[in-house]
Amino acid sequence: MLQLTDVTVRFGAKTAVDRVSLTLEEGSVLAVLGPSGCGKSTLLRAIAGLEPLAAGTLTWGGRDLAGVPTHERGFALMFQDGQLFAHATVADNIAYPLRLRRVGRAERERRVAELLELVGLPGYGPRRTPTLSGGEQQRVALARSLAADPALLLLDEPLSALDRSLRDRLAGDLREILVETGTTAVMVTHDHDEAFTVADRMAVMLDGRIAQEGDTAQVWRAPVSREVASFIGYGTFLEGASADRVMSAAGGAGPRDGTVALRRSALRVDPSGALSGTVSRAVTTSDSVLLTVDVDGVGPVGALGDDPSHEAGERVRLSADARGTAYLPV
Ligand SMILES: Nc1ncnc2c1ncn2[C@@H]1O[C@H](COP(=O)(O)OP(=O)(O)OP(=O)(O)O)[C@@H](O)[C@H]1O
Image (cartoon, rainbow, N blue to C red; front, side, top):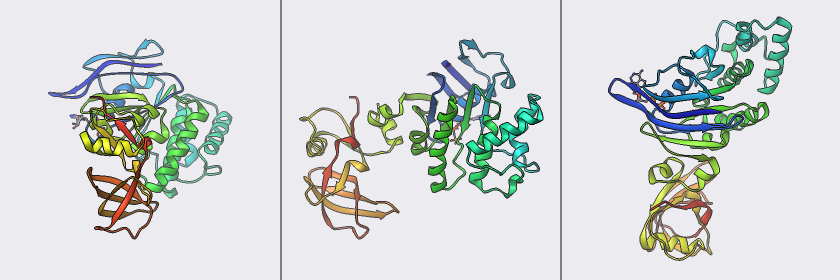
């Protein structure tokens, strides 16, 4: 088990990581999600032993890691750009951590073949890394990180150098590989889709502190604040009569105090929907039409359309789905 208690990292007067406490069971994958500059890479580097703690403790399996240097922690790190050796073959890159451990040649070859199979690149061993695509290079980097059977895998934005569609596919593969190998991992990302796909637990980090931590499904359904909600995909916030009107259309209970957060998927164009309004903006993407609709008696909300011909000024009806809504704690 990885346990962080009040972990604090400072750079001069700047507190980059501020009293962070987290627990991660073995076999679990935690995503640390947060905006640029919130301190998530620094937190990961502190776990790796690359940044000294100004305060707090870090333990693995009950052992205090203070004074344990990076190479003795038994953790592996993988970065955004993979950092493969350009002059070496794919097989040599993956075998590198095994060489450091003086694993014999036959065992190295067996393990490299097994890892290439695992990351979906069988037969790639003799290739030189500069001849690989970006996605293939990240798969090789992942295989190299897993080669030495790390106790804990630390991933820093492992997919962010890739384009969107490749990223979505690799995120799913990464999830399967981590589950199949039973790897305990901490992944830092600013992309909530990636965090929901890869991890079973999520810590949302804002300005050096953990704003919310829990099962990904729990965080998805019940963000604890507007800041967290905005960061995990809720785009509309309503209060008072506007909130009541939408929640009653969604079949919710009677009026309640507080703010309702809505994902775009909470409101969909539907000719038999209970709400009506005027489209103020329509943006077509490959799999949906993103609308802003000025709903009568509610105000502007994000909604999903089904037809690329929607246009500003058009009157539409919307139905509401409670699964895309959340009451924020008062
Ligand atoms: N070596 C350093 N010296 C001084 N300040 C630093 C150092 N490393 C990071 N910081 C500062 O600490 C804060 C957190 O940085 P960090 O890299 O952890 O953020 P991040 O959440 O990973 O951001 P990004 O997603 O942009 O990489 C930032 O304000 C950054 O400028």
